[in-house]
Length: 412
Image 1 (cartoon, one colour):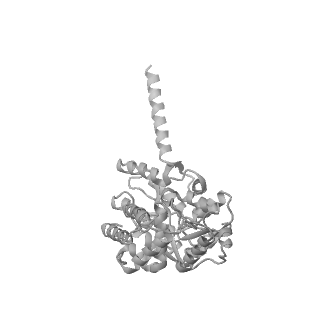
Image 2 (cartoon, rainbow, N blue to C red; image 1 turned 90 degrees about the horizontal axis):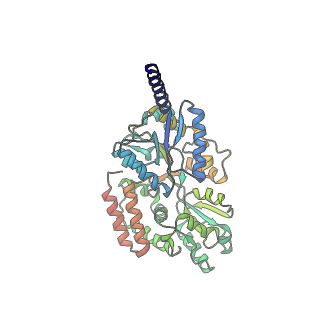
Image 3 (cartoon, helix red, strand yellow; image 1 turned 30 degrees about the horizontal axis):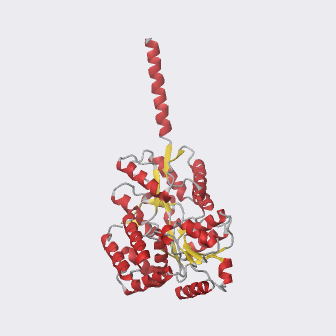
């Protein structure tokens, strides 16, 4: 019996040691990429991680649903109880400020230098994700927010043969469509989709530098130029569907596919979505008046404070930032690499065009997607825009935006 007890003890100890050793190899990657093109992109990145980091094991910590809302709630709970995943997905830029201010993510500036990311990513991106001289995330991709999508058959029927390059020209085209029987030529959804449209109008009126100044405090939200932009935003809303406050962006997109609308302002994930749904009769252009401005947002990964497998996490982050990892991920997700040295060979036509623009255009961040503002700032602007959609009160919206900016000043 004594011998059996000793044997059992050694057996249990051996199992425990094996389990501990196995766990030390795990890299839990927490995302909301559970299906569609996002899951396909993650799978491509995981395959590259398996090649580049063969000593470690990928553990999928994805939480589905809610366009990230569900995942963020679960993540917040885990961070509060000091149980962080090895790494987690977040939007690069100011949205990370909440985690940075709470001391929940580590500075990885030294790794940027070691991995060559400082030169591989464009200066505009580096500037936007640097906080007090430190960098806390590795962007996996770049999406462009300020893209206008169109149904080519609907626009051609109205006699529109060229994409408008000014807001006035765009409004003239919308008038043509209305005169031709298209009741709501500009498809629009709720919440952040309305903020995206407002941002695009602000870029057209203010230009890239003054638009960026709205988020760093150098441009006054109370200015007359902002008032003029809100008036134009109000004008554009008159061309949109009356049920806009009840629709997700994909519901609004159906109006384009069905020929009930001619245009939709949406990020470039729309190309992948339209392709996946088999709709090919679409065109795209930079939002009128935005010129050579590239409004960006990016998915990124971080090193959480207290992560159990720091070396494994760093290997994941290095893979995310590598040319091979960025190509494996973005070729499947429909976004483009944040690096400017990745060949566009093999990417679809839209992505090739976006990759060229990413290298040459002026880069500005998006608040609607967390690159320009914190989560609290973002939520307050979404709320203000939603109220404006109902009441159309220009002065009230401008006052609300100025108040939000003052409230969050210095908290980016």
